[in-house]
Length: 309
Image (cartoon, rainbow, N blue to C red; front, side, top):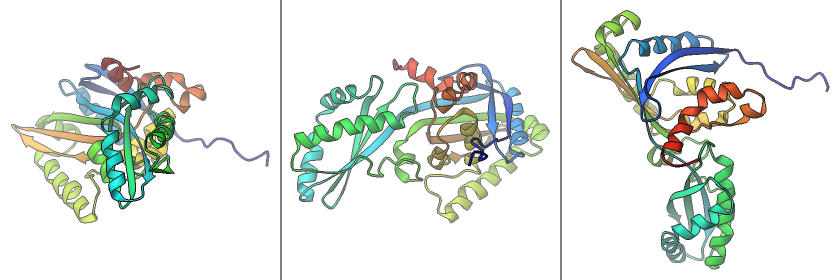
C-alpha cells in the first residue's frame, strides 16, 4: 500500500502572452498555465494568443456579473402554504443578510429565486463571495438561513441544504439564464489579413462554419444553453493547473460562440455565463501561490472594483 502514488502528474505548458482589455483588466498581456494530456491543445491556444497580439486592444473581456448560488428546498402542507412563505421571504432580504453575515464575513446576498413543484418550495440564494469561488461559503450561508426560515415559518419542513436548483456541477438551463460564478463575454475583432495569415482562412469561412457547426449542429444535438466547439478542454486545463474545482467544467462548458463579418473583419464573441474560479484555491495549499496570483487575480480585481473583498 505504501507504493501507491499520491499525486497524478499532468503535463503542463504556459501559453501566451494573451493581450486583454476590458472592465477588469486593460492593456495587459498575461500568460496562463494549461495542464492536459491532450497536447494538441497547447499549440491551438498559442495560435489564438498570437492572434490577440496583432489586434488593437487584444481580447475585449467584459465581466458582466458574478455570483455563486445555492438552492435549498422545503416541504409545505400544500402549494398555497409554500407560495405564502415564498412571498414573505422576498420581503426579508435585509434580515436574511444579517443571518448570512453570521456565517461569513464576505458573503453578500444579492438575489433569490423560487420555484414551486407541488408542495415543495425551492429557493435559490445568490451571493457575491469576494475572492473565493464560494461553493463552501454559500453552503454555509444557506445552512444558517434554513433554520432561521423554519423558525419564521414553522409550517414548512426541512428538505435539503441543496435542492439541485443551484445548479452545482450540472448542465442546466438555470445556470445559463441566471448565471453561476462569473458571467463573462469576450470579443475579438480580427482584420482579414490576420485571419488569412495566421488562421489560414477567411472571415466568411469562419462565420459560415460557426453557424453550421456550433449553432445548427448543437441545436440538432439538443444543446442546453450552449453552442461552442470545446470550451471544456481549455477550461479544464486551466482548472487543473491552478487548483480550481475541476468538476465545474460541467457548467463552465456552457457558452455561445458567435462569428460575424463586417468591413473586412471577423468579430467572434464568446459568452460564458457560468464560469467558476477563485483567486485563492487548492493551489495555495500545495505551494503553487505564484500561479494563482498570476492567473486568478483578474476576477479579484473586478470584485474589489465593486467594493467587495
